[in-house]
Image (cartoon, rainbow, N blue to C red):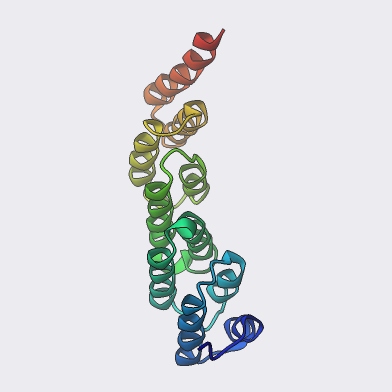
Length: 179
């Protein structure tokens, strides 16, 4: 029997600073089979939770409700990108963009959003990590052109004009083959 209503759970997710209280509310929401991503987004933005706790909640949620796993991972990646980037140099954001891509490899957003994290002055996250991630995505997404152009741009940013030109030409070839 539920201990909390969904309104009470939302309030606890938003306002509590007690991990045990939030965990109990989370477990109750799972028990009630609540798959409302908006409810869990409130929890993910609770500033009293650290990265390990957010990973715990997100992993459990995606495991319990695989149908919302992609949304959970994308949301966690964006939370980590905004709130913890200065501490972990975007490692957690990239980790969760990768998890989202594993759930829906044909979706371009995890790849493109990961690139939006890149700071060329600091090389954070490391550009080689992003390049590998994008290259893996080219094989899965329907609209390859967007990833190819992003690859071209990343190579341009690091001064590798040969690779930049190569990926730009691959992107242009897609347009030529369509006509």
